[in-house]
Length: 252
Image 1 (cartoon, rainbow, N blue to C red):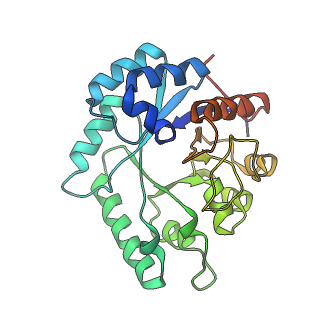
Image 2 (image 1 turned 90 degrees about the horizontal axis):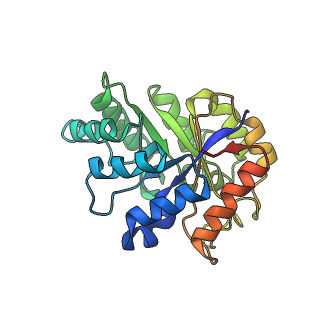
Image 3 (image 1 turned 90 degrees about the vertical axis):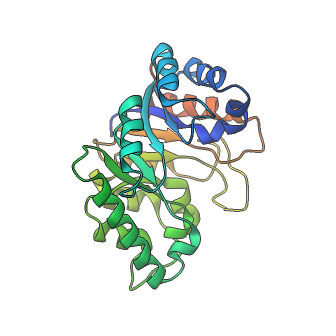
């Protein structure tokens, strides 16, 4: 794949953002990130946030949002329009994929969500964790069953959680192909109970994972749920690793 623009899931810096959201966005821009992915707005309105990111030269790659329904779809779409992104990303918890029966119920939920966004011009994406890849039903991971059953769905593949669940992230990235416009990039020991590291300092084989990515990948999105080191330093180191390795590019 050619170098894709690098975004950051702002959940990574949620503690600093809760204290000073505009200041945190500036720090992200100063590091060189090309974009940001939201997971809430820390009490600000989307229009206010849009002014800040535009001033900083940041794009909005996507946002984690509530599961679309007939009742909330209009609000979700209006937020996406205001901020200028196409990908509305959501997900479900570990219990929702614990059994085949629960996986089938989750598939039904995503089918309704896709129907709620039909005709809006916005894409519905699923963000995975380890629990979609730590078991198989009839020889297939729950994530595979979901993607096969809901053809409108795109995938924001979290490559670290795929590896943590026990699957091969490079193989999954290759298999999902152009239905994965967004890749979540994190690193660490691939143990769900341990803290993560800056990208490039853990166990994930980025040479294999990103080699498997199709040229149509639109964003590499750094997300570190928790680190034992300073989080802002970790996201800066992650950005520098992706740029230096030739996997991604920033706005500078």
